[in-house]
Amino acid sequence: MANLLHRWLTDPANTGGAFPDGSMHLKAFRLEPFEPWGVDATVLNILRNPTQYKIERIEGILAQFPGRQFVLVGDSGEKDPEIYSEVSRRNPSRIRCMYIRSLVHKPLDDARHAHVSRGLDGALLVPFTDPFSPPSLQDILNKGTC
Image 1 (cartoon, rainbow, N blue to C red):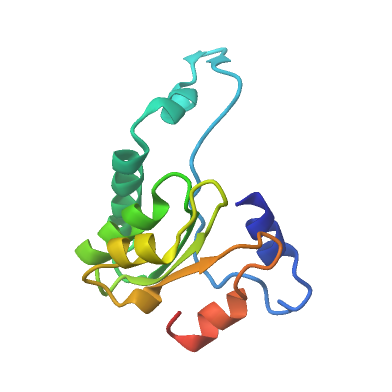
Image 2: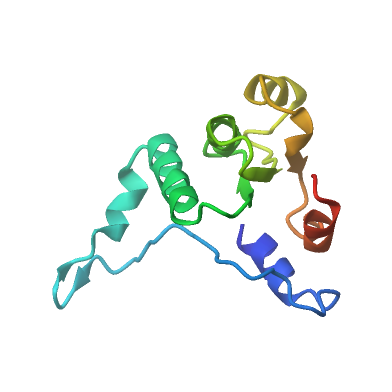
């Protein structure tokens, strides 16, 4: 995901700024588990069930910003397609697009795509493969749909 974010943040074609007014929410993680005030528990986040953790975090963000719509960006390795589809089912008017980088070792193939997008508009779940050629952020923002 770092390559994708770097591209979106540094693309010279984004003259008006890569992102609209809003916020970006990433998983907190530190390699130094001990701080002067005690143990930094963020390192323990990697041990939590990723499905439940991600659903709780995304739904918490949706609750914090009730008037916003969201574009979810993830990869096919840690069940992001399944998680994002479930969040979209629970919040159909809030999720505008779900972009999933399809990884070689666990791809978002046609069968998996059909399974996870069951009950949703399949066009909301958009796979891409090249981390250096992600979907254009301007296209995402301008089209109104995926």
